[in-house]
Image (tube, rainbow, N blue to C red):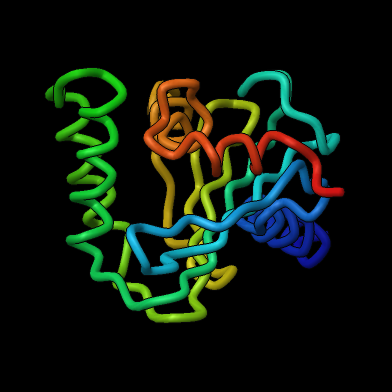
Length: 167
């Protein structure tokens, strides 16, 4: 009985930490800055369609890096994008940046960083399919994913590619 209970608990715990495999590709695109290709992005949802964060959950944004980027540069770019979207950097943004500093790592060409927004509002980050950790603030997921998916994104071409199924 104890072995069975231990096995069930192990499966529950490990499956809750695994990146969802029951998601379908919505769209994908390339993000470049000036003449540098920075990353390829793929957006996945439960049914392969985008409606909104709640109805599409789980939402997975996978970034495959095409050059080395330091953790500090990635966090700075994230905060800059929140400022672009909101017109300012709030105390909440600064708190989230501190959490990201504890979770993220430098990326090298070929590395993948994935953001998974779950139905309960929690966000899990994966680095090369290994769980880095999570952010439990339910406001974080939409604020983070809006960097790519908001109509006010600074990368409208990429947004269009992510939200439109590939031909």
